[in-house]
Length: 451
Ligand code: PEP
Ligand code: CO
Image (cartoon, rainbow, N blue to C red; front, side):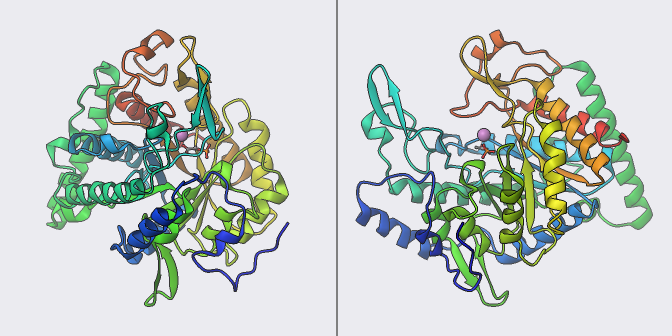
């Protein structure tokens, strides 16, 4: 294994390593032109926001907070519109409110949004009826229709993705600053399509008790509630397409560090986490808080090298390990992983992704996940971390604020047959609004239990 040399990093040093999951472009000159243009455009986020997030994640790592990271598996360009973005923000804010009230801890909210446009694929090519074309790699790279033209990797899409990421975050910032996230704002409380009576009531109780507490606070301190409850919202995406990420990597002299300014918290996906690979090389040099997806196939040495390579100074809040074993494997894998990390002497923020280890094919052939398996993996994660003396400080969820039918189960008991009704995801199945809110309530409850 190649050793990492901390002195020779620069934003393009990853190019001397093997880069998995990168598209093949047929016009390198057009690609270079686009990358140069991206590098000139103003950043989407700024370094002090990134530093603020790292401090919050450091607090969560000390068990003084909880990370809620959620959103689509893949955003699509077509979905970049106001209603959908507002709904996505709303479900995340409502979930965070439920978690806050149950855990009595600040919740760090990070969307899988404003840039979640590139997807890793298990195969480079896809064959249908004897025709073989490049796989769909997300709207940042190509388009989902099964035609040679749509599946061609088009560099212009990098610019379109960048622009949509900026539009999305601009709208989210305006909503948050404009009072959408004020706890007294009616939009914030509205339950939309949640029709399940018990869920509505449980949510209403939480909302009322927080409302009462806020009124009490206001009368006691004379301070406006909006000031006291100001919400911060951060963006994240899988840092997969390295030319895109490199183009937005800037040296901020005031901080004396390099930052990826396309998002607050990029993460390394499971398929690109090779210690001597290009992604780890790129990520080790940026100062953002970063995540790494952890699966059962990673052995102890691999894990330990990831932790020491990506966070050599053991900086609090820098590294979040997002484990995704599946309800079936977590009992076998998580204790080993915790022990391996413990032996490095480094600390990390532990976050559970209960989605990606629980994907299956439904009887009708659609990709789905069962709510009960998602909940079970989270339950086991809380229990195992408590037994091991570590703190489960976050959950990473694929969800949408809309009334889709992609995952089965939940309070309204969606079945395989229901999936056909409103299945919209081009990639992984997401919890719908109601299921996401229910999950937040169950997490809030479970996190209070002792092992
Ligand atoms: C994802 O988060 O959508 C994903 C592809 O996850 P993983 O890298 O854990 O498989
Ligand atoms: Co996914």
